[in-house]
Image 1: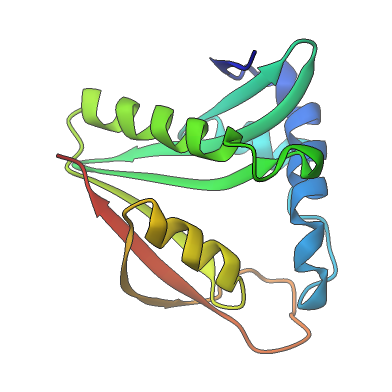
Image 2: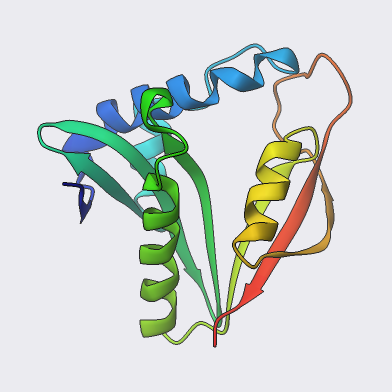
Length: 155
């Protein structure tokens, strides 16, 4: 049984490990860790991480942040052995519920254009393309990339 809870600063190391493991799939265009514990703790100053746990294991996490009437989420990370089992959908549902409760009218995210698998997944979950943005990570990529912005109205 999966339980979802809000992360605390003491979870930063475990979150960074999970995110970096889940994002290994991106090594075809960038060679670096996706995050580190210090960055996770820094993100906790402006937003929250939700954790999906199957005691005692961390199997998923997601970052969420309120931005006026819009909610933003990112870094959805699922243990590779648990991908395709609904954990990510549970986390996104929990984030959308949180956004609705906070009065947000939209849920926003951004993905790297090369992650066509994510593009398809988020479309299936009701997100639509809302534009593009420059890939602003300072780490150079092996091939050119950009962000696709996606949004979903929260009814």
